[in-house]
Length: 488
Image 1: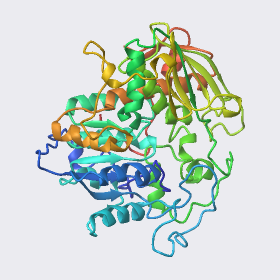
Image 2: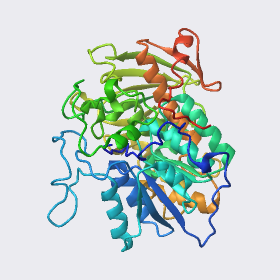
Image 3: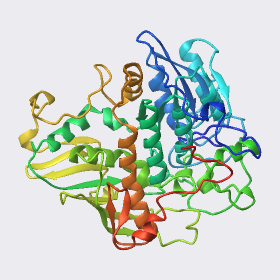
Image 4: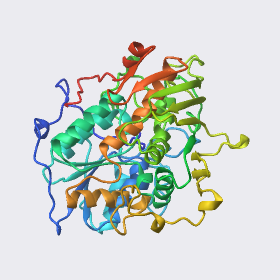
């Protein structure tokens, strides 16, 4: 696999047998409980860009845990950065002269070496089949950094084995997968953190509480801008089939695909199989709307107080989904505009970033006293609230989740997860919050896929209602192939 954020785990699939886990997944195991002076042993499944740059450093900085095993199907792979790609090549040239790795290189060897260097040992184990991590009785928690099509299967298996779960966003590949994850999280009682780091960002939290408590007046609407769908493919949209890269063995390639339907002749298509490109095909990911909406829609829900509900409709959908001869390969639109409508009448306009025309990345609440939120990576409040501080909130105000002292901020999202494990509680971005957030992205994708202008959504029943509901509800779930099942 070419490991990407999708970092992917697991290696050879047991030939022929139904792939539901090992013995640990047959029924629910007791939840791993760690005493106050104990240590959490973490297994990292997927050694791509997000693991290397974000999650593994987050765990390594906290002395209360130890990363003891890393899992991926690939030892080393190139081209793990956004935009621009080199050619596929083998292990030659992956290391610099000093033995370190180029910034675009990922794989289990890179992450293992990071871990061992931090601990000053060679104790970090490597496995290529993710089920070995789940079945390992010494592992207390797993960090899932694979492509989206693996999240639900792995997370459910880990929870049923009694292990706590840190799952990267987007949390699921479908609404039905998210529902199953939420159900198992409640049944098992494990601590579950979704990788929406903004939920532990104090600046975001303050702007959301200003909106939530009416300090900026009534919310009149909102605007969200997220990246276009295929801006970092690098080599462009192409359905060309090319030889499988040398870093992918046949067994590793089968495992990387896992529950996704294989292409004809088990083909390798660089534009959707090269590192970071998998998100552009519906077999593996959902495009930019879920990938970045996982952050922005999360902020929107927190400010509107809809973390456990969501919108009631999507309207004014415009996208280029219908264009292009290779839509089976490039499943998602690169051009999009649409509105979410909430039960209280608030309308949020979502569109792609277009800096040249005044649309930078943003999540802005348009309130009576002015705009509040994040704009072009900076906080934004009206002049009358420029000196508003967290201490200005009163006991009567609604306050969002606050991490423990010293663990406030995106770089401590993993520490907040560990706090939840030690204190036997949930954390900043729970399984249900992650599900509700990413459901919004799935709703938008379904509307675009059906080439409709609007759809109505019932957030309580979690299904489409009204016109075209039957057609839309067919896309609530995705099929799992090659013998893999959710196990929920």
